[in-house]
Image (cartoon, rainbow, N blue to C red; front, side):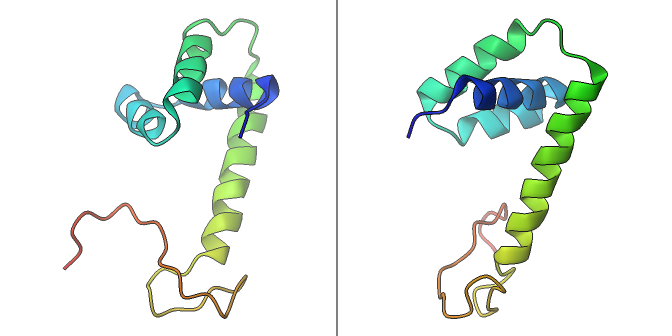
Length: 97
């Protein structure tokens, strides 16, 4: 899957808005080539207005919200989007007990 320049720019703006640790964690979760492009662009962003940052953040939050509504919180819960799915959601927990 190729990522277009517009999406790379949005990702770079998002990364630029995050603290260093969170940005690094996020970049580690995507393909290396794409992460490098995003990181390079985030270091060289010019002409980004406050409004553009707000639009990018709002779009990101909307996507996260939509996705969280579609993915069950626990393996035994059914998603609204796919009530027949038995896939496990992606979690940030490490070694849940």
